[in-house]
Length: 132
Image (cartoon, rainbow, N blue to C red; front, side):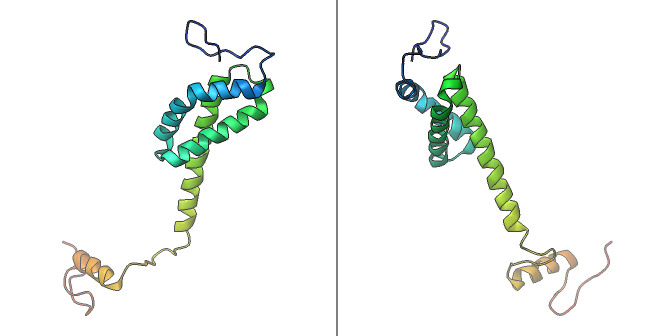
């Protein structure tokens, strides 16, 4: 893809087909886009998927995009943020299955925690109930 002297990417000539322009952009920007995405999602495999998805979306919208390099970076950023939001939602939903006050921890650990809080042997009901 042609680059002016200031380093900003410009749209290829109208006669250049979209596939050729996207391939050129991909070859120039893939490594940088993956580094950018890894910085956002912290997982290389996911970052590669996001970059690939961004280029597929760019291909669909090629005729409307004026600055493909900026567009694809923004698309990667948005896809990464969406992915992070989705993983947060999923982790919250997984935690919502557990009822308040219930724990899946071993009873021995719970007893040890009560013992630390209240002193004495919590299994036998001994210990201080006063807080001084």
